[in-house]
Length: 70
Image (cartoon, rainbow, N blue to C red; front, side, top):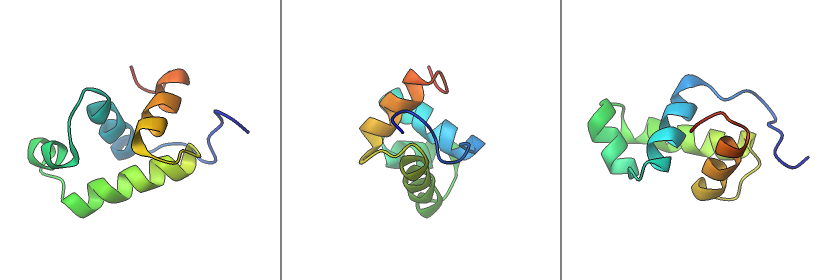
């Protein structure tokens, strides 16, 4: 089931992955978006689960490979 999502990523998950792919840390994303840190963490966790990734870097790689982020 490699590179197949369990469920579609929501806009916050895509935004967080996209910003992280550009080198932003969780703290940077919180500051830049005014979204609470716990929601950012939850978005990363949900994205990793949906993309069946073990960490954020792998989630970014899979999302990019699937053309969900650039």
